[in-house]
Image (tube, rainbow, N blue to C red):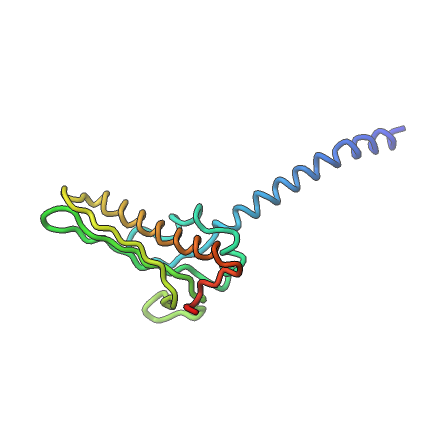
Length: 159
């Protein structure tokens, strides 16, 4: 009698367990894309600004264990107000050995660049950081869009 009762409970919970497993698996797949490393040569912090931009297609083509996004970005203010900024990004194989001066990254062969010129009022340090982050995100978004347009995401080099 107890065996029949346990079997009924098991049969009722089995579909629920499958739904939970499928739900957790789908969450894991979408979270996988955002876990990507970025070496940024700028002071706004690169990795924390790309988690919601990196696509599953990009991550499957360029696994984060072997590749990294490399970004060079800056924003220079003008003395009379405004300023100009840029962000250049690309994907490169990771350099595994250390260098005595610190982190090493290969400059990407194919690069995606966003630029912006602002005129007018003086730019505060906070606004400068916001401009850098915006340019960085736009350049990474251009790279993701190029990956999505190509069936095999050929964005590593110029062909």
